[in-house]
Image (cartoon, rainbow, N blue to C red; front, side):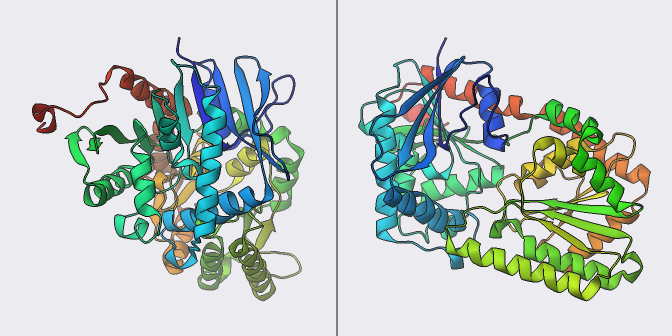
Length: 473
């Protein structure tokens, strides 16, 4: 049986005994993929050191071997904090004004991908299937091909793929597009993302469409398809049902008394629309004064990427906004917004989602947004809450029964909050049931299984230019 090699920017190495150190979307997805395969997970250890070893550290944990490498301070600055998160991330999320491109950062990004490829190539066996994850590693397949690897290599892009005019504003866009076609299979979250990338490759790289999502670029065949990522539905549902045993959940619910709960859970990032959401909540209270003291909004926002200047400024802006709203609307007995910057484990989040009448998932742009799916799955089947969801999140394609809103219109969001709070139980059930059924069918196991089955099919595809008949299909 083929061995699976997964490559990601960070690697979540389980502790001795199998306990995972992280339960984020990627870690859960990788865990599911490895249930059907023995394999290797390769990536950055999270450690920064002045003299990183050229050889990865190997850690065996049952069916999976973990191979981790350290980064130097310069590598981390240029590859991670620089090009990946100050150039690629904002461009992918349509935030051109926040993009900060520099040639030195791009050189560092390319150098780290080359270093990863050299270290990984020594570990790859001829029959291995390689699955690479996310924007940090766009050129990795090209680097591996340059070292002679002919294995099936797939790539999954967890964030949005923007329209061609947006992506092409990045000075390195042409090089990245030429590199990405060295993947046999490119997975994206939505059909809109697929169309954006296909159109860009046709327009700028003279790609020849072959049908069924396949393209030929300079004699190399690749396929681009949508694989919307799912969540661990059974595990999350079980966590929600048992959440009352958790002290934090019990105390939070007791503190609400009779108040209804609005909840938002997001990493601190400008793509998530946290300040804009707070303005919408402020507008809701301004236009519904009878709800002051009767509704509480909890926003859980762990800090991230604090070494990137734009994120430091965002943290200051959000703190100021919270203080301004609580100061103007609150009173000694009621705080409108409870703003929390610590991360909570899955059982706590599941319990808080279940207790919330309204889940606010209003990113300005998001590849998928798994919080939306978690909120839906966590709800009680007897009395579910209502999901208010940005139409610019990939999850909106799978959850059309949510209250879909434009996150740039705070008054529309405020009206959706009001509608959600007053929605009768029959309508809440009618909206929730098809969503939870869809999430159960299209869970994380379904996602990983479909992607890997598609990638394995490339073992039987001839990697040669198509015949004239094939090109005409």
